[in-house]
Every structure is written in C-alpha cells, then in structure tokens.
Length: 96
Image (cartoon, rainbow, N blue to C red):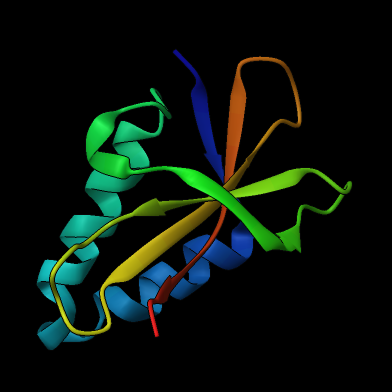
C-alpha cells in the first residue's frame, strides 16, 4: 500500500471544481480514484504510463481512469515518490 500525496496545484484545481454544482459526480469520481491509488494496480483504475509527461524530477507519470464511458471522462495523473511507498497525484483533466 502506498501513501497518496497531492500537489498544491492539484488541490487548488480540485477546490475550484468542487465549487461548480454541475461537477459533483466528477469530483466524487476523482476523490474515489485518489483513494484507490493507495493500490495503483487496482483494476478499476486501468493505470498505464503516460509518456507525454514527466514528473518534476523526471519521474515516469501514470494515468488512471476516474471515469469511463462518459463524454470528456476525467483522468488523474500521478508518479511514484518522492519517497519510497509514496505516490504523488499531480493533475486531473478531461480526456479529449
């Protein structure tokens, strides 16, 4: 099991999304995904490497599904670290 950390930017963006009543379901999905990241191999996350982005120290970045079969379904991006047994969630975005 991993300790899940979030960046300040992630927290700020999620707070902005929480203020939009139309985004309640999406915020709930993002929150659930972040909780599941304690086990990044959780099958519902469908985690895979996202090669177009690197972490702040050059770490591999991974993408996890927050939603599926939804227009502009949200994805959550994260990397391992900074310490052993830690995961840092860095961003979320709607899938194009």
